[in-house]
Image 1: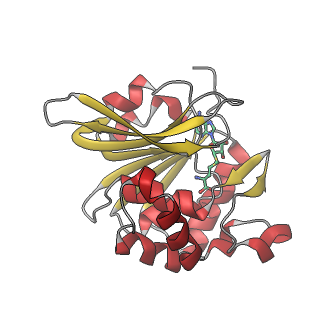
Image 2 (image 1 turned 135 degrees about the horizontal axis):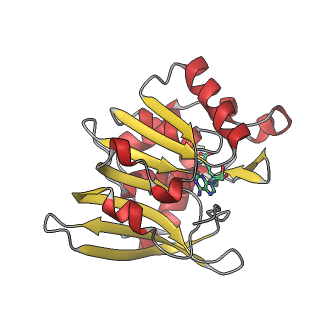
Length: 211
Ligand code: SAM
């Protein structure tokens, strides 16, 4: 799986402006047991570089996209990060290999509870999860060094911008359900200015909720 991701990175080098991702990110991708995060019925495909169904009409993201989003946020050990869209918990586990404190929010109760059980079972004690609408972030633990949104939104949620530290980075797919979405990197400068970069076209399930 790691070799396939490396090949996809090379193939998309023009979009992402590099020919290889941070070696620490690739090491984390090689460490987290993806088969522990997928339902029994698709376990034999766990190490294929594609999204897989996890129930409730949701998916575990494609490993290449997980690696790319993790690389774009410039993970560092001392950081505190927020993920919106826990899903299976796989992306949060990859983050937890690299970062001290990971917070993650899932809107579908059953998925959120399954992921919390998985974190406990696999010993990811630096992940704190809850069920709720991630559009509003997690004010109590803000500000965050980085925020990663793993469902597509029509716009960048203002509460998330607010909860990002100056100097922080956010990665989010932006676009409608039936439209081409763009993976967007947002940088908040030390002065609080917002700079956005479109990285590449992607396809994510939508960010839901009544915001
Ligand atoms: N990060 C996940 C993983 O590693 O398995 C994949 C996430 S899946 C592509 C997107 C997830 O976002 C779904 O589980 C969906 O229920 C969740 N979601 C959608 N809208 C949300 C919201 N407003 N707040 C929190 N989670 C949301």
